[in-house]
Length: 77
Image (cartoon, rainbow, N blue to C red; front, top):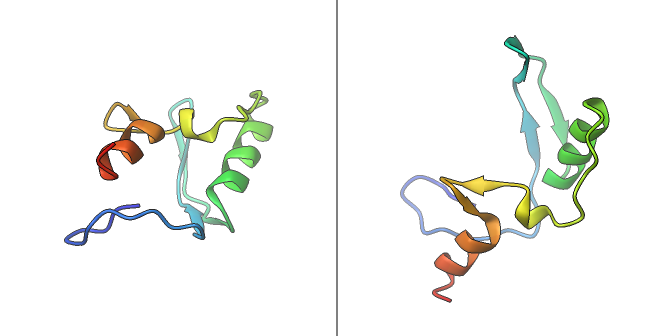
């Protein structure tokens, strides 16, 4: 997780707020709150009828790097 001006860190707990969804060029701004990123991901997969991956670390990227790659970079691995 990243906060401007602070060192990168990983949190085991977070709240996730979805504040906009792009659906084929139509933007909706209905704010939805989820307890975890995983719950948000699973809900979006369900809505868009996408088979969710069991490996969340490969689902998201940070400037072209997978979560695992970024985590290794932060940890100096």
